[in-house]
Length: 370
Image 1 (cartoon, one colour):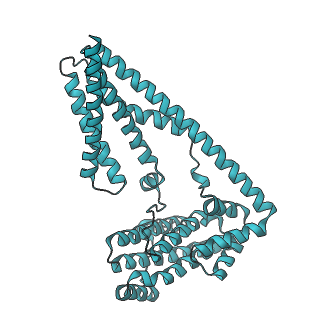
Image 2 (tube, one colour):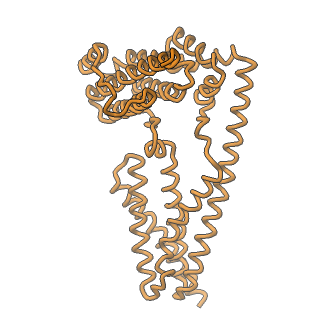
Image 3 (cartoon, helix red, strand yellow):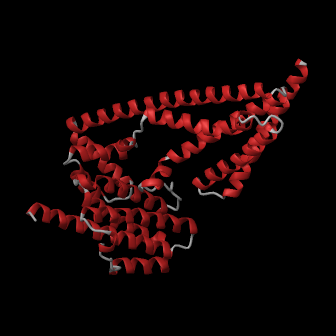
């Protein structure tokens, strides 16, 4: 093993041990916290730190069984005991100092840019908890949790909901005005296609404009870092001071970050602009997703008519749509960490009321025409 590889291994192991201590620390805070909402946030912080443990373990080439078990340090044990006696809120300034030390440790290391950015986010969460606020529970994590946190899953469910409610109302509105199932089918398919293409086009224009603006702002920030590094360093230090760091910690962290232009740009994008450069989104991906999700919802009330259930199409359309409404409402509630039953019933009532109103209007129009 070369000297460079040996140094990397030592660095990764130091990072791993720090993250293991962070997991133990947040777990201790969760056990000490009496407020269920705050305790859940501490547990989420521990889970996020556990993903960092996995990241550095992978860098070391360790399998899950090979990761060394971490002993609870005296510092973590003491903070846990104090949190039980005094409450977590009084202990959070010390926890913030530890989080700040870990962030400083990562500064200037390109391999730790994402971990460092998430650590800064953790500091903001801790700052909110110290001030007695319940922060936005949007921890950075991979896979499914990251998709939910970033809103991709939520956006897809909302797209299904839009297609379902709008086309359910349209189908029942037309069905109220005519008993001809072919006319209802034609109206339902037309509503599905018109709505899906409209949603897709709107999503493309919106995402394209958002991406272009974000790329422009990132380029401006890149130029400012190259031409005005001292001003950018002062801005970054001020941001960290507002997050709860001392002036010395903020200045030291800003100094180290500005040594690498790419790390500086990534950090300023997240901290000053509120942009994640790795999550700008794809306009075409958003377009396809919007089209598909809307279609999935809009096809439900049309399906009985498309399958030729002439005598019972209206009733089946209502039953299938009611089931879908409850399912979508429950999914949205779960994503928002609310009661699924209440969310499902609320969406069911709204959707059925919408369809009922359009059916009544369609019936009145049908009577007038005849």
